[in-house]
Amino acid sequence: MSLFSIESKFDHGTFADQPAAHAGQVLHAARAIRLYHNRGQDSFIIYHSIMVLWTYSMIINDYARKTGSNTPVRTAHAIMQN
Image (tube, rainbow, N blue to C red):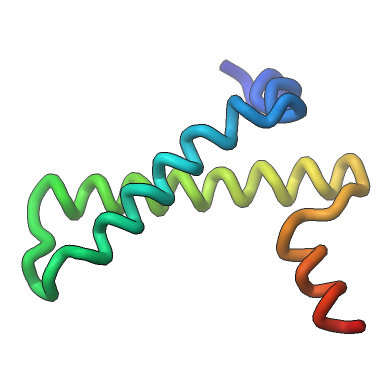
């Protein structure tokens, strides 16, 4: 799957939003793990979730730059400036 096809599906929202939502759920659940009890598969799943969210943010920023639309961060920053 090329990046162009990812961006064209991104317009509909569900293609990129669902993995990001699941990654957020994983990170939310990971906060319940006690300190120093995060080992093995748990570490890999948390790392993978962070990479999913990072990739999602790169796609959002690139899409916003190409279309001239706002990202949630840019909108929040504009509200804080006023």
